[in-house]
Image 1: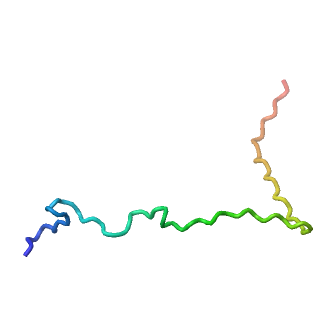
Image 2: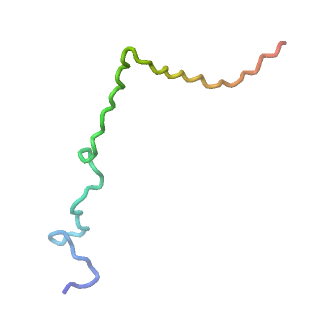
Image 3: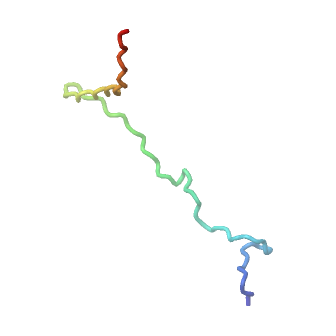
Amino acid sequence: PRRPGRARSHHPGGRPGRARRRRGSPRPGPASRPPQRPRRPPPPPRPGSPQPPPPLPRPPPPSLPRPEPRPP
């Protein structure tokens, strides 16, 4: 029987160390990632159809109020 107190080595020749993990990778590689769908540009509007309004431009951020110069 085995002597208690020491785990059996998983390496041939009695090298110390833990057993190698049999299966599974620590991180999935690029091959196992599902492919991402390329984004298709929106189709051009059909002539004669009502066009959606263009997006409004964003207003500029409010700048800090400058102190007015005092008259001398």
